[in-house]
Length: 210
Ligand SMILES: [Ca+2]
Ligand SMILES: [Ca+2]
Image (cartoon, rainbow, N blue to C red; front, side, top):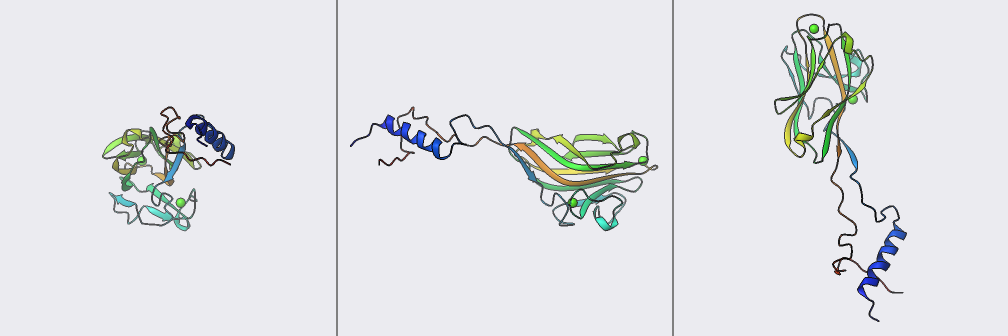
């Protein structure tokens, strides 16, 4: 028996929605995706990240045993600032995810003895300042706080990403950083019912008659 093409399509749609109802026929919205940076929680120690200290600190990634605050996650975190007249940053080269909306997010803890306007945290991408914030008594967090920076302009690009802690000559500041990740709205998945059966081409479909 020759089954009309249009009928085949209808049967397949009904079967598909019955078997996998969560797929449905509605438009599938873009998912929100999180993606940790390589060694984003610093748990692998001094890998993936490179560390720079103007004052010659031998490293900026610390183990919990030697830190005044516990890491946000695991046993390791970055500790920026810490000494006077410091420019310190951890950085790595990597590809920012594709997406219509891309955020860099990390947990930070600001601990400062200074007035505002002297010590700072920065996020720098390809030598461009994306974010600047004071490290001072008024911004002390007293706990881990999630920090977010919109970096959508770099979506899909290979970049150098840096997180800085900068201090002047008096009244110290610490900027602790942990669990660095991307949070982005990904591209929508391909339509499940690609041709909507409008073309009459049912080549992508198969149906078995009982
Ligand atoms: Ca950690
Ligand atoms: Ca200071």
